[in-house]
Length: 105
Image (cartoon, rainbow, N blue to C red):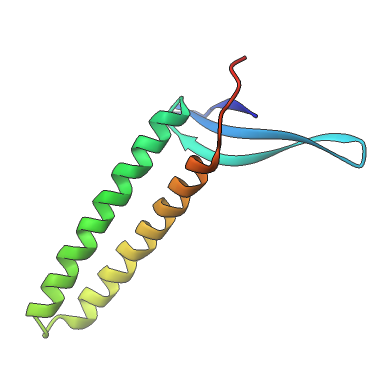
């Protein structure tokens, strides 16, 4: 495994890449996108911060929903939006934590 740097028009992004053989050919697959974080630990820290951020947002939305019944449909939409974000970042964090070690070049 290694970290690949991709340069876009705006800024670089990083990916964890795994190299493997299939039918005698060398192939690569993206294990995780690190986005703008250049190290695995930075990516884990970012994902953990996002999980916490969306977790707190979900708690606030649930509290508002419990006290205010009138805007229920709007809060349901907002709740689903934040739940999707939370689940995405939780999955990203799980993936990053499952990567044992990236050998240095």
